[in-house]
Length: 109
Image 1 (cartoon, helix red, strand yellow):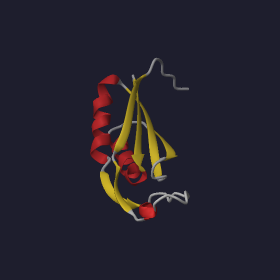
Image 2 (cartoon, rainbow, N blue to C red; image 1 turned 30 degrees about the vertical axis):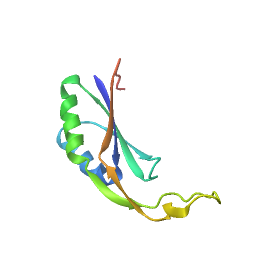
Image 3 (cartoon, rainbow, N blue to C red; image 1 turned 90 degrees about the horizontal axis):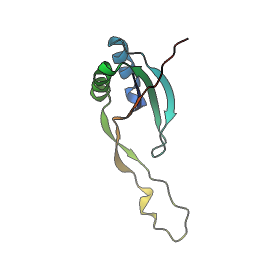
């Protein structure tokens, strides 16, 4: 068995959950937040048989879309710093960060 940990942007959470249900994939959803943009994410934990792992990865890749959004970088409080970073910049967000691990044992009580 494999453990898939998938971190996706909140905007893709419902669509991905529905795709998992349709494909009969059980997943645990955890609300998380990103460090860089401090925006909401959802982390899915999925224990899956080895032969279904690629199917789950394909679903995640299909549903989790990258998009562009504007953000204002944090302003430095350093008096000598140049305040050029106070204007919004366009960054690419979304998609998915996925980790896979082997599961040594699995128990369901």
